Image (cartoon, rainbow, N blue to C red):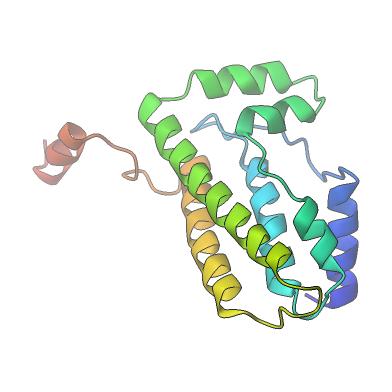
Length: 168
């Protein structure tokens, strides 16, 4: 992504621009996958930081946002329905999704702390940030797979897995 395009994307995100309704839930899972854009935003800013030092302030302003708060903040007329869908999720799926999100929140806040501890301009590719964003992308891919029902066996319980493996 070019620096000017990155600045445009981040400026739109800060202004709350959303190209689609963020409360649109995936029919198979009941999750709004647009929520994951919140994490994609911080990952992209961290990755672009060495080339766009002006992103430092935006990075330091980023905060974790729970799934429920994301839906509530959308101000969509579908927010109540999306929240209800989340409450009715299969408990195993919701726990798995929430665990992945907790991991993303932890990695993001740790990376933000690292950026804040360094003087402006002194983070020209610190290995800690590269490693952190790599792990964040892995978790983001996992969260997307859960939200989009891309991995049918990702959240099955032990008995269902045994039955599947035994052909029952």
